[in-house]
Length: 310
Image (cartoon, rainbow, N blue to C red; front, top):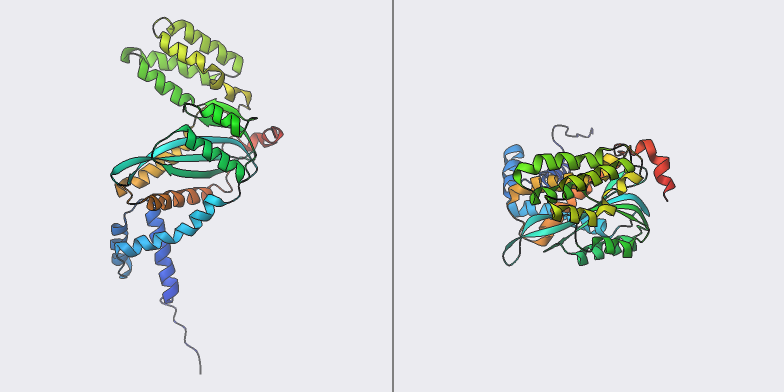
């Protein structure tokens, strides 16, 4: 007797797997659980409650737990550190800090190394993150980049004494902008932007010192603050010109943060820390999959040079 195989519809398990994959993809894009349930019912006729959708997204929890504990590459050329804030409901509605570390390896491949969720940004948490990365196998970093978190440089010295530190120049510019008169902002910013556009470090130092001379009398507090961090502002000039546009600021990690915040916006708030962790974890895993075989701009041209730093 001939066997009959249906071809018009996938079997139940395959159908279910496709829907569950769709749920996870929609959830990662910031679509709310109620909206996902409505969409699936309209598209497939299958009824999913918001609670069922939430349970499906929880299937990612074990994968995210593995992600947080996985062994890390032993070396990254540079690591970007930054915190962003997302809404999380605990006893009261709050925006909580999400600490994120993204790295670029000497071969130019980039990766969300890890993240964690804590109520506020403070140096103690950054210290724990750095020590955790080291304990999981990340032994060498040539360059760290971050904003002006108090104590960051000392925390980096303790965890990675051979690493160098670059202060994010975009953050520096924002701080300057907030401390000068509105009428002077355009001129001040135009002068300061010249600092990261030079062909070599000597020229950049000259431009910076010209900036001190020009604006020091009018904005002595601004110049005083810049002099205090001068050693950390021009470190990126020590590296090949092909990668300098990527290592004078934390713009790369800001781009990831902006994607996360944009996708989180429709959710208004996350009901639990686990739901927020799941959401960010899906973003991190997706990012790492997407960039696994991509070489960051400029890095491919100087790979041998970057390997020589180690």
